Amino acid sequence: MPHNTGHQLLIVTGMSGAGRSTVGNSLEDLGWYVVDNLPPQMLGPIADLFTITKTPVPRLAVIIDVRGGEFFSELEENLSLLGGKAVNVRVLYLEANDSTLVKRFEQVRRPHPLQGDGTILDGIAEERKRLLALRESADVVMDTSDLNVHQLSTKTAEHFSVDSTVKLQLTVMSFGYKYGIPADADNVADARFIPNPFWNEELRPFTGLDTQVSDYVLAQTGAMEFINSYAKALQPVLDGYLRENKHYATIAIGCTGGKHRSVAISTKLSELLSSNNEYTVTVRHRDLGKE
Image 1 (cartoon, rainbow, N blue to C red):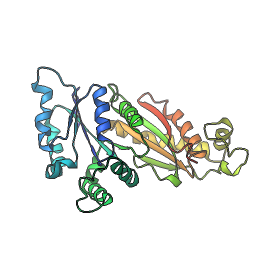
Image 2: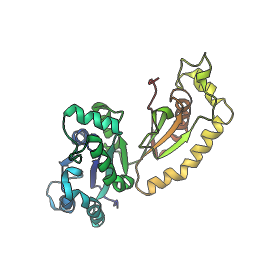
Image 3: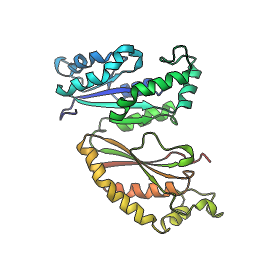
Image 4: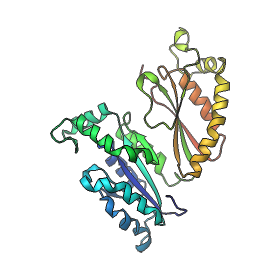
């Protein structure tokens, strides 16, 4: 769907309570023109703003969600009609886990728009079902479960600042399996084949960011072989993302608790991937400090 043009149209959608308002405010701060709660049928006319207005609108963000009722069901159809427009269209899908969404709705004391006579969880389940196909086709999936409003604003800026479409923005994320696999990961690898420093009393208090733990992990049989092979295996995948105009990707490396092995492996992997000038690599240690 994207075109070779400077005009950018960003569709912001996803789960109710996942942070669309925060993202919208952040995009405005970044210089985007933001339209909230737009009926999908208006996507075509609003895309024409790029060509018919005297004042250029280079970057336009539209927030669309289930508040649109029956109109929302026609979103995918209207998105497909944008293929003939001279505009680069992307879809940002926001989500969060059930417990986080329930907590957010309870804090603001508002019902879920789809719960009807049921519970908040009923509404969340119905919304996930309706949005499944849209999530799978989104250009960017952002999980906000562990992000406060400031962290979400920062992550939005990382993805959608002025230079965000120049390179592939790659996040290498360590995580602990006992806290769940990251929902927004594009590729997941398991570092639990390496002996766990947790069982070494001298190493246990430290993390994969500390030299003694990192040296221990990387010296284990197969560790560097895995890192080098995985970086090489990712190369055609990441190149394909660029060809398909996918500008954001998350590579997740997991171990049991997200403290030792995955942190050391993710840090080393990011160093290797950073050697490619087409990538902007950021390291994030999701579960560090949770234990």
